Image (cartoon, rainbow, N blue to C red; front, side, top):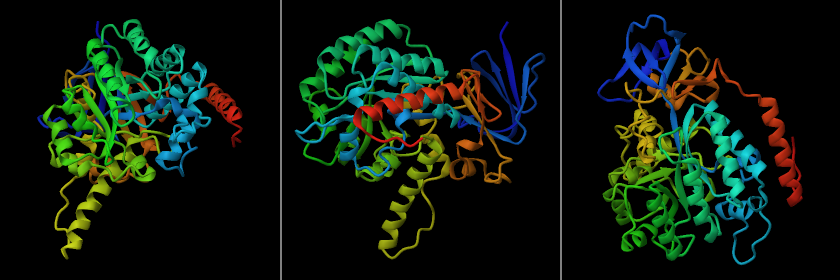
Length: 447
């Protein structure tokens, strides 16, 4: 017998263009999948949730985040990219000073990932690309995966490279064979590589070759705008393909954006971090103009907010401002906005699913897909009354409005609280880890 759950009386934003939206409808879930969407569904014997006064949306998808930094949030809120790199990895110039990343133990990786993933789930993020470049030891990889599994999230674990190379290739093979033999579970694997701007082409070639040997996707930082044209180099080496996801892309040339689009690659935009740290203006509009479908990530909670409501607003309003400014400089007033709030919601859902190769599983509330969804409470002061559901989700909502979150049909948040999470215990572990890390670098912590 299949377990049936029916969510009744919600305003439903499916983001499936063939189904459309509903001002009031039910969602029938059987085991881990959406069985039906529509008004007045019959489901005798099913468990029922009354979602009257709530908006149902697909689970949000974060395609670029270094989750391991969860317990050291806020420490680079006033940092440039160079300062951030020095703090986290000690990688400015030839003087490699002490860095937090270098002293992470397995228990620090575990609690950082657990805190970071629980934060994401509570904010309605049901899928996360964990760009985990904290592989100081094989045990660090094991700890990161353990936390992802315990949290109940859907995730792509990006086994990451920071500075070292050598032994990590063999350990990536071990992780693939030990944890990810099927490729169909809630947690799947990618290879998170440094790319041509941060490593030699010999290393890049080895890493991409390994990922393709293992049959897993590849995610890499690619900023552009400097002496190295990373995408062009990859093209010249014959290494581009639909399995490549490029984070940031702010300074890439038009030719490089065309090359990504033409080979089926994808882009992850992290607007809040990019504008703070001097990486460049988000490439949102340029990417769309070159046939790409942007996805969004929070990147690092050491610097910025960890929710995708903020990233949607930041990306949308920045691109609107850039387009409006071009008209204003020509002496014209904008007559119509070319990007809508629905576009932004798609960046954070179906586009994210496509970027991670998961579009057949998640990203829309389509019957047959897995039941990753979010219920947003509209009785709250900042959302009531509802006059424009999509617009208000993007422009008005925040994590505090997230009432319920389901991953593969299983509730991970209900009535505004995470399910079966002992937050006091988790917080104590996070504080203890933070205190250890700061003590090693003689940094004072404020509780």
